[in-house]
Length: 362
Image (cartoon, rainbow, N blue to C red; front, side):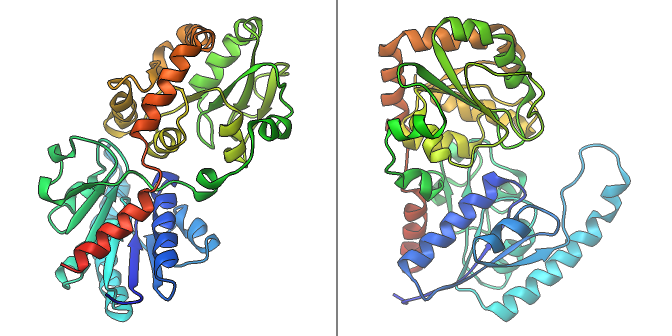
């Protein structure tokens, strides 16, 4: 086997695509330090900032998705596709990759389509229980498709599917901080149970409003909150007296350590992190995502009695009671912790890289 590889990783658009891509790149470098890895993303998307910050070169394609409504933006799409295919061919011809990895997102399609036509092995990583359109379109070009959920043969050829889990942030997995240190860091009381509330970096209005509506109920139950409101909502909900509220939590490793129960959206990366760490969770899936995939992500755990679900439309009236009842039922918390931990795949990046290298050798 080669001691190093030349690899192109493509995709992005959201943190749920970008962070797994970087985790895969880091794992390749960990196993094969002399490897050369570059990224291909969509101009104007978050990968153009996050990937260089992680220490990797990225090439930008002029590409975007098809708008679901009639809009003049769709008129430029054919030109964007042609331009992206041409630039992808130039990148591949110059870089000469040993293989490519597509993680979903607009840029992943053109790059991996061209790679497959040029005889370069293509591998895909799908984070969600309901795949994005790019990975579904590329399923025939891929040699292997690494997934995080069961029953993905509904979307991909069964002989190509490998269940690896989603790569998650290494700092969260490797944290050696104690719960006491985490509580101290966030100025939380030792003697109270803690609920961590996260609705994404920008915030989730429904979750924030539901928590605000139920503050007195939660306080009366002796519960303290570690509440990430999101950047869009910081300061909107008045003075907070029962815990710590912040727009953005930088030390998520400590936030997870402090939490007895978590209230969260059900994006693929959140589900994967909470599973890997074995956290008892109430999911409030966002209804504003394509194909309602967050509900499908959450239900893959709820059906196995590994998590609870509160519908977004019912959160204001039900979320407070659900949190209070769960926190009072220690045996239920332990059951959820045990069940969700059993589904976690904390070494997903290693599994993905090992699967690719194994396939290359066959």
